[in-house]
Amino acid sequence: RLKSSSIFGDSLRVAPRSQLKATKAKNNGASTMTKCEIGQSLEEFLTQATPDKGLRTLLMCMGEALRTIAFKVRTASCGGTACVNSFGDEQLAVDMLADKLLFEALQYSHVCKYACSEEVPELQDMGGPVEGGFSVAFDPLDGSSIVDTNFTVGTIFGVWPGDKLTGVTGGDQVAAAMGIYGPRTTYVLAVKGFPGTHEFLLLDEGKWQHVKETTEIAEGKMFSPGNLRATFDNSEYSKLIDYYVKEKYTLRYTGGMVPDVNQIIVKEKGIFTNVTSPTAKAKLRLLFEVAPLGLLIENAGGFSSDGYKSVLDKTIVNLDDRTQVAYGSKNEIIRFEETLYGTSRLKNVPIGVTA
Image 1: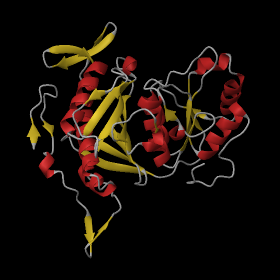
Image 2: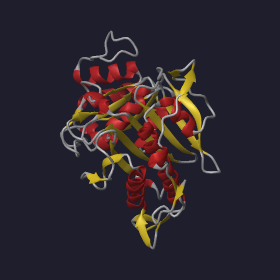
Image 3: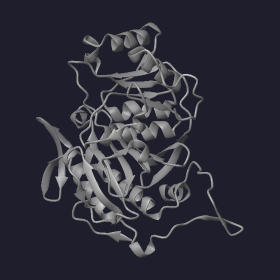
Image 4: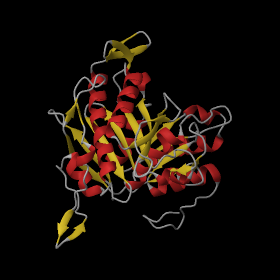
């Protein structure tokens, strides 16, 4: 059914609680998981990806929010220091507008207990249950400072079970996703326990269609180096960058973390790095950015690292915890760890085996 919303403008499609029933493929009376297919709708995919009716509802509601954010970003007015668009009777910066849209979507889902964002880094009660419910952390509009240049920007979010967003790890996530607002609008999604990272394209009629499945990140000479100022006083990072240049890697870096990480999933190769130094401190937030992107990369067959271990193994102590990170293929992450710290936990670890 469609429920009116003063924030969304367009109606938000929400399933009533009484209709939140799991749909499973039947085979001689037994439940089976069928393989997803290119061309499926988001709803069809989620029915196969998870038996959890609440998680399906949450991810559908977030898809509605991403669709609306894409329109608001595409039609934003940019001038002075901010890009703005209408939010009811108000004019808001697009990152704050995206923030409000996502919080409303989570309230509408009826299954989110707590949520917090980079813009509002405190737990907000969304009214959902603790038992069988979820907590969500998100970066509403990563790269908002480059909207005026018409570069690709995006939304990042991670979903944890229950009511905890601290004292947990990225590996505890049950789903993670990106909304990507570029020449195409896509919803890139990973569900824990279901193979692959999956891309959905926003069609003209406003529906999400499954267009790509990534299950392997192969070796390939493509690099995306963030925080290059750290090479000034981090000689190991400088050595790593020199290696990429010497070996004639293709440089593809926009300054937007969403497209820079997404290209690894789409091209199925490469590495993204964001390294710290004594004068260039960590800026990337583990909860809002690093852990969700870690699940997307690792579900796609890639690897992540903070220099010592997978970012999915890092415990989130505080909502604002920050870290350095690399995402990429196995050999690229081995090179990253060995160059920066002299050894790699991934040596002699077969592909697909957690170190």
